[in-house]
Image (cartoon, rainbow over all chains, first blue to last red; front, side, top):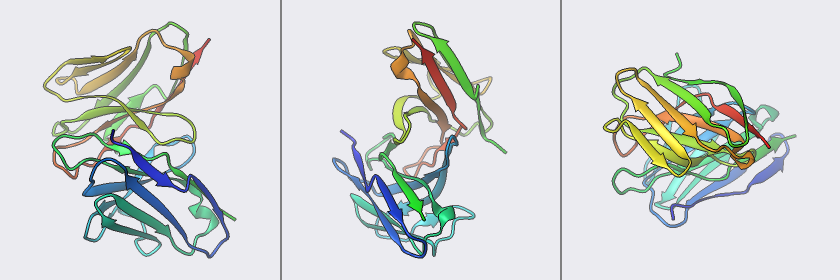
Amino acid sequence: GAVVSQHPSWVICKSGTSVKIECRSLDFQATTMFWYRQFPKQSLMLMATSNEGSKATYEQGVEKDKFLINHASLTLSTLTVTSAHPEDSSFYICSARSNRGFSPLHFGNGTRLTVT
Amino acid sequence: QQQVKQSPQSLIVQKGGISIINCAYENTAFDYFPWYQQFPGKGPALLIAIRPDVSEKKEGRFTISFNKSAKQFSLHIMDSQPGDSATYFCAASIGGNNRKLIWGLGTSLAVNP
């Protein structure tokens, strides 16, 4: 149980285009999902907290107009990288936890974004 | 300021040996301490977690030791195997449903056959 599915696993796009990444909790409901960014051989950097039915909470330094987050249902959150640039190339990972009790955080398998 | 300090940055262990990774934290309000394992190109996977009301938790070959007074916790991997070669992250968080994890910087473990 507690599976988080992230799609696509990798994407290559041209500068100036937008890319949407989906994160789904397959067997549980998640009021809250988290979006992370990870650079090679580094730790995870929290970008934003996605709340179902309300606006996302962004961490300091993360541009909310560039990284659009939508949490339309209890099982789906999306991250859209708008007007992508090469410096946006990174590994993006989503995570979610069940609404019930003291539940652990489960991660998707990440999306490798390359902007050319 | 790094709220969760993890060491060593990298570790090489022989097959069958014990791998030990240490973490220290600052905030005494932390009440949940998970360890995650990450393979290249994959998302982190929860390995084992502990709360501060116990000093040790064991799951198979993986053990967390927790020292509340020293504000330290460690991961021990017994009988380390080449398949354990991965990056390990410790983390900590404060209670609440919208629990935000504070991450260590990771330890790259290589288990030689």
